[in-house]
Amino acid sequence: QVQLVESGGGLVQAGGSLRLSCAASGRTFSLYGMGWFRQAPGKERESVATISRSGTSIYYADSVKGRFTISRDNAKNTVYLQMNTLKPEDTAVYYCAATSASTGRPSYWGRGTQVTVSS
Image (cartoon, rainbow, N blue to C red; front, top):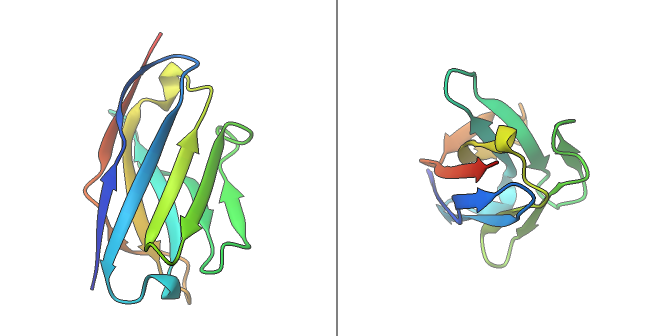
């Protein structure tokens, strides 16, 4: 089992920044790829960014490229999402997930943190 707890969400004006954190406990953090996903009201959950176990392979959704940065600190069992130049369309609940090394699919989820961007 892996327990994931997100933090850092909140209300910010368009153009502003937020940094999300996801603290992991339980099984060895470095065994898992990690990802950030988001779900806006009335929409399906979508992948925002993922990072491999070593941090050398990173993926971003086109909608956030150049604005968001995912990183991880395996010594602290934490993954981060730095979000800059936020837009109202970034408003969503952001979830952290630990992904299976073999399938790449999320195996564990956090409860989410709300990000609201006002125009």
